[in-house]
Each structure stands twice: as C-alpha cells, then as structure tokens.
Length: 542
Image (cartoon, rainbow, N blue to C red; front, side, top):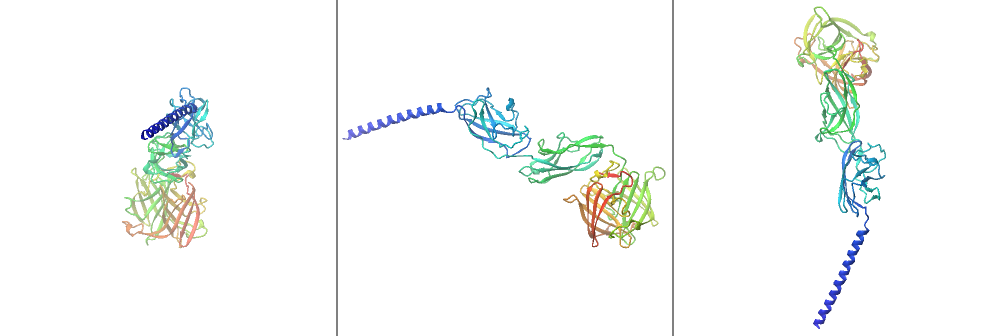
C-alpha cells in the first residue's frame, strides 16, 4: 500500500513538471512574439537638467536623457532621429544653439551617436530663449521624432523654468562733457528681475560694457554693497577717473556675477566728450587753513570767467551772524597780477519772512576791501580790511566728501548739470535781487548757506547740511550760528555756537531750476530758485 502511494505521487509530480515545461514554452513563445511585436521606434524619459531661471536671449546649458525602448536602433548617420521641441511641436521659443542641420537648427537636437534598443542617450545642448524670433510662450518640453515615423515615446515633463530678463536697466547719470583727468561721481541703476536675491557674497557687481572688461573710466567693476531682493533696484554710485586724453569715450555698464559673467540688459551707450581742462576755477566753499582750525566761518565763491562773487559769512562785534559780499575781478597786470580784488560790501534789506520780497528796499554800503590769491597746491589766502582792521587768512577748500571739478563755460546749458554747487537766487533771475543761497555740493551732500536779513534789516545768515533723500531732494536742519567777530585774532572756534532753528530743503527739476523750502521762526516758505549767472554761460561743477 505504501509503494502504491509513492508511485501515485511520482506520477502526479511528473504531470506537474510536464505542465510547467509547457507553461515555460508558452511564456517563451509569448516573449518572442511580444518582442517581435514591439514598436520599432519608442522612447522613455529618463531625466533632464535645466536651471529654474533662464534669462531671455542668453545662452544656458541644458540636457535631456532618453532611453530607446523600441526595437530599432536610432542612427545618427541618417539624421533620422531627433529630440524635438513640443507644445507646439518644432517651436523655436528655446532657440537651440550650435546644432546646425538645415531647417531644423533652433528647434531640434541632433542625435549625438547611434543608440541601440535598451540604451540611453543624453542630449547636452544650449538654449537661448526668444533669440530665434519665436514670440509665443512654450514650455521646456521635448519628445523624440523620426522623420519616417513622426513623434514617438514619452514626452519630457515640464520643469517649470521661469524665463525672463535677469536685469532691467533703470537709470544712468553721467556727464555728456567732462574735463580730462577729472574725478566725477556717476550713478547707474539696474532692477533685479530674477527670482533670487543678488548678494555681494555671490559676486554680483556692476561691470563695464561696450566692450566688457574695459577700464576706460578707472575701473572695470563696482561690487554690490548690499543684498538686492527680487524686484528691487540696485543703485551703484561711484567715482570715475576721466581719461587724460581728450576724445569721445563710451560709457556703458551691465550687471555681472563674478568675473567675465555679464547678464541682463546693458545700459544705453553714452558718448562722453572728454575735453581739455579749462583755466583753474575756485568755485565752492572755503575756510581757514589748516582745515578745521577756525571752524565756524567761511567764504563761498561763485567763480565765472575772471570774476569771483564772494560771500563771506562771519560775525559782528556782538557775535551775531554777519555776511559781507565782494565782487572780485582778476588782475592781469601790476602788483596784484593773478589776484582777485574788490570792495567788501555790507547789505541790509527786508526781513526773511516778508511775504513778497521787495528788492528796491535792499541797501549796500562799502565797508572795506578784499583780495583772494590761490596757489598750485590747492590753497590760497584771503586778505581783507574791514572797518579799518586788516587780516590775512590762509584758506583751503572745505571737503566733506569728494570735491567736484568746476569749469567755466563747459557747456552752454546749465540745466544739463546734476551737481548744484553754485550761487542761487530767486527765479526768475533778478526778481528778488538782494538775497541768495550758496550751495557746496559734494557727492550726495549739499552744504547750504542762506544769505538773508533779520527783522531789523541787518544781514543774517543761516546754514544747513542736506543729505540726499530717497525722492532726490536734499534736506536738513536749519541752524543759526554765533561766534567771535571777524576781527578776532586768533579766531577761537570753541566760541562758535549753532542753534537749531528749523528745517530746510532743496528740490531740483534740472541743473538750473529748483525750489528752496524752509521753516524758521514759525514761518514756512517755498521759493523757486535758479543759478545766479553773471558771466554767461556760467560755471558747472562735476
């Protein structure tokens, strides 16, 4: 009985093995049949590489990897199989670069080598969005394409890449004419149109362009000083060294990330006419030398051609603010050749807060004489006789930032200037003759001295230091100052006291038109102002 059971089991096992063998034969047959039935051309997506942000009209390296899942080998030699743009098919939006093969340059990528069934191929290429002139938006999607069988296989997924300009030009401020060898502040601004902040740590900078890398203006790169968020504006304020040789030079800039990596829009090409420097010009704010030794008084010079209009702000015998003026002509010959000499004048007039200033009430009287002499080292002397007392002061320019270069008759229209250093008065010119505001403008700071009159008609000066504001105006605190009399010898700056008496601001519509607004002694006024040009076309500082 046991033998019979074992034999039966052996027969069952043999039957099972025979069935399994039959199944294996059937499966093999199915596989052969399936293989024979596989499509000659088929493809599966494997991977792709493209940045999340791509700049318009700028080349960027990308790659797409596909697998040949068909039964036919993809042959490069025949030029029959391509990677083609989709949605719509064969669009030129991505403008495929360096892939010349007839009509398909720009919208297809040529197979780099033969690809057998089951093998993978990576298409590494460059795209340059919109540079082929295809304006319609198209996603970064591809599919294999046979000229015989059409498109086949899987389509690549959309990576969601953003395409935009990386930097938009906003503004550029530079002179159209400049004297050779000068150092001049300029400003260039670009907007961050990427999706990520620009940071100094990542090497973002302003780079010279036209051509790139040139040092025509003393530098080829200006580093970013602070982070700039997406959508924000990066403003670069820097100083250029004007070439020493007169000629026309191109002024043009572009954003850059590290050395030799410019991107985004380029600022407009601006031709700056570099001209031979004119005669020495002394326009600006001067004080006692050495600098700071007699802080508290100074002399503002408006220098046009051979004439200097000087406004000396000092103190009377009682320590009250006093200003005197002098129209000084340059002596060509004689004992004082090269010096600027004239009469010192004391002026009285209507009070600062009068509603309508009547210039016919201004009175002037000569109270002495003065002489200005300058040397080649940048210094000079101010010699004067006032009320019978004579003094000679060594003077030097008062520098609180970069001193500008001033040139008489640099160009005919002072409205083109963007440095406001000069003597200004009410607009229209001459309408309120008798008072003025003298400006010393260095980089983004204006030091202003307002020459006016007190309620008793006596000369009064007030001053304010005005940094540039976000809206382009200049504003600061208005001070009234007392100190030692002009005759003091020596002048003790410790006795100078400045009292906060209000606020003042300056806003300019161009280089020859502005508004002077002040609040003082409970009164607020706004007055249109213009440059006081006494020798046409005036002096421009840069």
